[in-house]
Length: 269
Length: 307
Image (cartoon, rainbow over all chains, first blue to last red; front, side):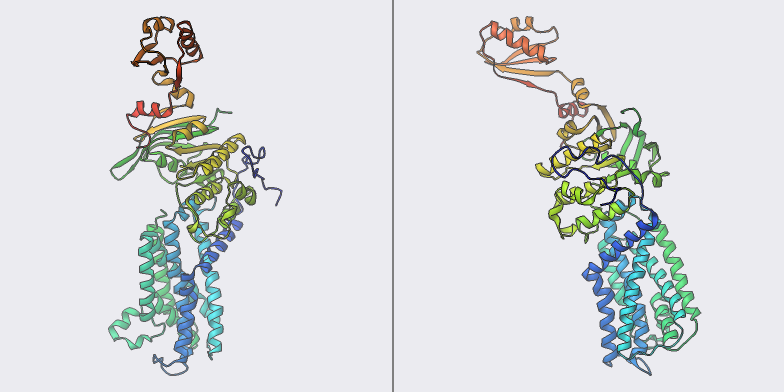
């Protein structure tokens, strides 16, 4: 117990005199944001469905498709093709699907409303959410990279080129996830976020190479944020490219459009 | 102490589409406990949520602790505590975890352990919010409203759905807050809650304050009160009336059952009993019917409080 702490009476009807005497004040911003980010991360890691989405599915796909030759991944080791795609999937599962579902239900259950009346500013809440997403992604990347190495992955290229891809990918998926969570009903967000996850998993170059699709479809699918992220990561990690500017451009465009739309249309209640 | 208003609402209008929820509402709340009393749909929650900064008035002005809740919200929010009518907690969070979190957002919070003990939330243990009982969820929301040691607390229907024991615990906490100088604005549709807790009651109906004052003032201001007794049939009403103050009325409703209307005070009660003594009458079942807030409400609006 610290010296700034009050001690309300724990029994009886009168309480300790002065225990509730007003002493208002906001905590320092850094403390608020840290506390908020930790709580959000804890809520995510405690949620079984979220773990399924962010950890178990990417891990299973990586292990399964690396060891069993189901999909033709082109020349070279399957894991060299799959690992970058699975990293892209991990980013999408956390920044888009997970964040959309969690935020949708926070909105539905009045959590966002209650926090809006607390000393925590809205921008600080969004900062904390982003920090929580980034922390989760770091845990995912560490885990999935370790598994990929165990499966014989030999990545190329410069890790410094991977970082802007992950950051812009996170920004793009966060904008789209928050747009969904802030405009649809929680149940609709839950259904739509899972459906989009599944569709982009199949049609976004994660485990199925885009060149398996017809030419016309390839042109369109290549503009999806998941395709840009998996293609960009593959350019660097599989083919040793220095900086995939085209994919970064696509992700930046999605990030700008998604975040701007979320900022404009997000409803807190 | 009761001089500076903590809340000042002037001519507040708030519409949702074509529905007018608040229709020119005026309310001044000073230090102490103010109850906003009214039936469901009267505009209580909209009024309180405008004070909390959630809604922008369509017209009129709202000042809370002298601040504009929308434009000066950042300055206001650390100074107020808010209990929503429902929800407000992560469905996967435990009670103590959520309360500790809200405490961390404030500079000088109350001791969380003691508050949990005080409100009987210790038994929640590791249960997550969605599995708590309605009463436990209510008490957690109350704890979250006070843990930051605010100057002013807004409680929206704080005892709705609570059992009598939990209700009493909530009332005790409100009294302690008041005793320690915290102002409280609470909405309720229980007139006993307003009578028990409030220094000041604002009766709201169809988006307006129709009467405001202390519970005593409101009850005095209405119709006359009633005194009833039973005795042998056929007492001399004319003689009784002569003994009573001039503006009183008396009648034998059914044989042996009498009613006196007027300003029912100790003096009138003494007059009736001494008249009975003079006439050899034993006034059985003598009772005084005090005018309640429920009666006041019925007179002002023509509606039952709990519709």
